[in-house]
Length: 173
Image (cartoon, rainbow, N blue to C red; front, top):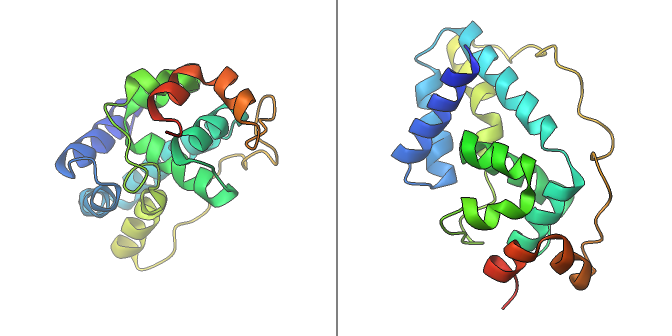
């Protein structure tokens, strides 16, 4: 599976789910079980590589603005959600996390930003297809610390300075 096919699967399941992350995860599993096990592992590798690329302080800060705070787990689930938004949003956010203010049509803290189940979809599909747990993907492990300059999530002024567009559009009211 190449990168284009990966993003086509992500986009088609998001559109079919009308943006609902839980429905998207279910549809993703349904779509992946129609592939052969090696293609599912390829999908998992693409997903995991992007998940690891997004382990950055600036994205964690953007998640904190959007979610009104972001624990370790919340940031993990946010990264899954970010991948689920598709290539344009994902790559745009990596280029400039504050650009999420323009890239997102809307953001509902109750629905958006948490797509933990997307992170397990390939594993679930592989297990359904083969009856065994997915093998190690052979990718380097995630860094022990996020890339970049740490963000103080408690410092509202610092968040407003680093993410002015996000704070204005989606920040605390």
